[in-house]
Image 1 (tube, rainbow, N blue to C red):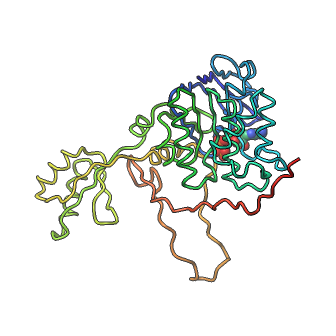
Image 2: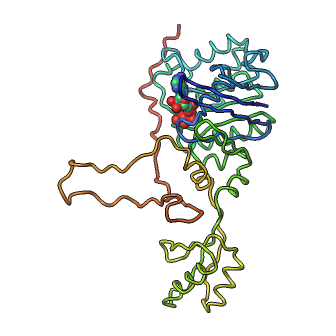
Length: 360
Ligand SMILES: Nc1ncnc2c1ncn2[C@@H]1O[C@H](COP(=O)(O)OP(=O)(O)OP(=O)(O)O)[C@@H](O)[C@H]1O
């Protein structure tokens, strides 16, 4: 178990982490969420003794990292996948780490197989793609077969197959009774991987609860309601009746209504009283992303502004209007749903550029 008590870190006038107290328990994957610059990496570095707290303390199994006996065999961490000597092969990098911790060389080949790098084990890591570097960092964390594992953004740069692999790996490590603490910016991924969440904003604890509780506490579910297309005016009639009952009603792009703040039976009764037939009345759970956006909207340090492109284009020659993003709390009472995510295709690893280390 990892236990932080009053953990605080200041860099000059900047307080990166402020009075954090939490526990990360064995047997479940605990997600660590927070906007950019909220103090996640600083917290993780303090857990493994790479940064000294200004005040407070953090322990692993009751001891500060530096007093954990044979720490590399008890605690594994992926904090910065780029922290590798690029001239060394993947195998030599792991062999060096293994020798420092008294781990037998055969374990190196085992973990190279676990992370799928056995075929490039003798390639210099400087030729590795981002995803291959992540896999090497995960291999290093697994080397000592530790009971406590920390991963800072482990799926960064991985392709969909790699992301699925990390998800399965995290869950199986936790199912073996290990303590697994993992930070990520990918909410949809976190929702599938973690059972418990610790959320921070500007260095302060904002939530420490199960994913289910977090969503229930920070984002309301809603109902989708559809009336027959053949009955003009019935949608507007129903929307007005639901709003009168205290529901928050928004039109969906496909003609349905999105209703928050009223239970499904009440919506059905209101429709019945208004004399409107329903073709659909379905419950929808809010997503982790919605809940996260809602909780952290006041704790974001780096927020983009509109790019007006002043003077770059001739009058009237601008491109298409950007997709309108609903602003939390602006004109939507009590709930917020982000637009559908854009599809991003991660680059495939380019093995052709990785040169092979001299077999000396
Ligand atoms: N060595 C340092 N010196 C000064 N300030 C630092 C140092 N390390 C971190 N900070 C500051 O502390 C704050 C928290 O940084 P940290 O990297 O822990 O955030 P994070 O949540 O991991 O961010 P991200 O999600 O972008 O990785 C930031 O404002 C950062 O600029």
